[in-house]
Image (cartoon, rainbow, N blue to C red):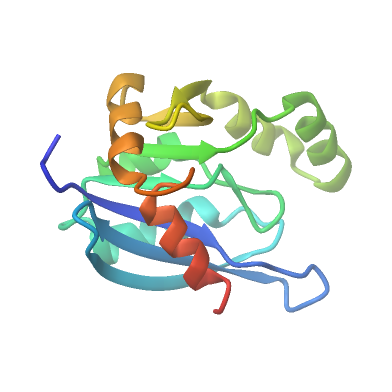
Length: 182
């Protein structure tokens, strides 16, 4: 691992289902010495199927030459818009970490997807594609992750290195703060 790797953080903005049907995805490029090196955004359809392609396109067009890793706060954006991290890894060659604070109840998620979407099988296939593992942060706090193109040991080291305060790695913490005002 480089001394100061660069991580693309991808965060969704707060959305309201009664609004225009889109959610903004915010991208931050954070170097692990604390330097914010880039910010961009794109939009996806709420409950759509375009998050994987939108994330791939933004990374390939703006960040591929300067990035070492990608971090996401889970694999869903805009409601039930599932992001295929294995496909993003295959297209970009970058290791992908999807990090969540609580272990998901997969049966409840599958039930909700079946109830509220017409193409539930495709979305559930993305959900089942990656294994959920637990990582221990520097402060002893456990988080859960889906990984693509990176092993658990390297992922845990990266999460520890990129979390300065609290429980959220800097690329996601900064992205979340900015996304709240977009």
